[in-house]
Length: 259
Image 1 (cartoon, rainbow, N blue to C red):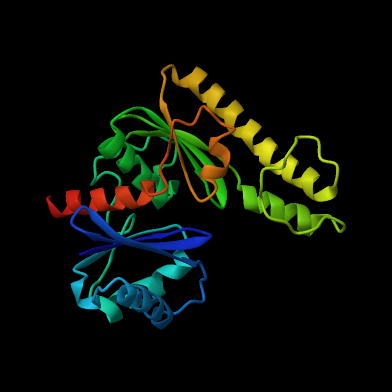
Image 2: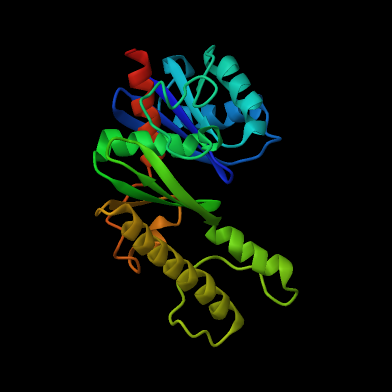
């Protein structure tokens, strides 16, 4: 079996594959102080509930945008499975997996965005705009051949909500939600409206401008935990794929092993 790990700024996502079949997905909060033993305790508990043994894991591949977690994740793999994991970037470059990174400084591109480009190439095979509602909201332009053509980075939805609370003394800490109307008649609804409808407008406007520059009709694929919340109000989104990065990791692993 293959364990894929997507370490983002908010969550670490573990996905276990038996061939192409997904056996389970588990998430924990990203914490640079988390030890290898803590990761092992977390995943061992979930493996037991799935009737899987640690010995069943033959390999591990990791996409990480949080360098401070890499040491503990490596130790977790070595303690739990006796395996040195493969990292996107240090061990597997975009060139090795046939991804052209057409930006000014290719070395600055995050591992997750490289992995998403592979998923577009191998699963969708069509020009695409990938909207990732993560800690940052990223909007990436990817060719059907997987070429990464560029993108946009904006503060994430939850990050913006937290910034409102932190910077304004009288604004409460609230969850992101779609309010019943655009014009808020209380503080909570006004904040929710500003963030929810504001981000909907931001994403919709940027996609319109991207399509004008790109000169084609790409598929718009949304991923990230908040993607379903925006689907109804953003008809421009054609597909929600919450497993996009995991699919990309699976595809990269098999392509590297076949080299």
